[in-house]
Length: 393
Image (tube, rainbow, N blue to C red; front, side, top):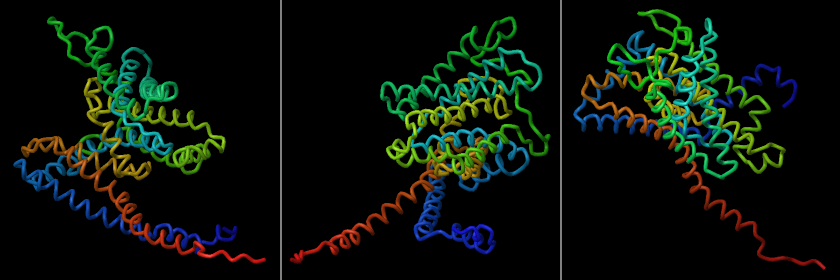
């Protein structure tokens, strides 16, 4: 590219439009995605009718609970922030070719670390909430780093270890909120009864919000998640470290020959992914989306849903922003489905169908292209093989 083309607005415009113009595979992927989305919508409606529900009433309930008014928008945005943070961490990890599927447990450990710091430390002003968020990120990152250590020294598969560590995290949090000397709430009244949850965080350990009812209320956690998504997108695409991460994900052997410490970088991205999931746990603990108490069900499948957001976004942090909003609509509106007599678990079925509708098209297009191109390539290869060798004296 010449220096003149960098300053020529017409040339810049042509190159920008060329990037926006999809090729043949792009049109096939878009068309197949639209078809599969229609199939997913039809299958969801059929399931609703088979369970005695009304598709129109269910759609209206989801709309009412998520987007119909300022209260619905507030709930949707509160749910979108932790999903986006988990998805951003998953994008970083997947870019390095490491697949972390233990975000649910890392969210819980982040909430545990944040609750312990918030209830044990006495700090003035907003400094406490900053320390709570840092502790949550460090807790989730350390929990994910254990899987990296197991891979390095014992060869344990990362996908297996992160998944199994999730169940350990659930038991650990359950123990913490059920043990008086750990994090169980103080006994209530003369009966001395205490529930399996922690005391509420102090006011200065909770994230601040903007706006008041009946207007839309924005929480600081949403801005944290958006900054994380934009920052990671820039780092992965524009920095030397991001180039190394993508190199490791594309070809670890080439990256090793180029001087990249593949094992160390992969372990660091795994820990970084856990740190973002732990930060999401801190958001769930310190934002109005919950009760500001540590409970065994704190994550409420936010880790799994965040991983699905990353899958649908195809590991692109900026694309994860609108995708997380879609999943947040389903989470916020799903609570209203009980009013229509529809089981809440059908929302999870709808999520699964959406994931398949977005993830399957590129795979199907690659399979179709491979089958169409296999025979011509073979024929071409055979046509250039010489049948006779002429020896010239």
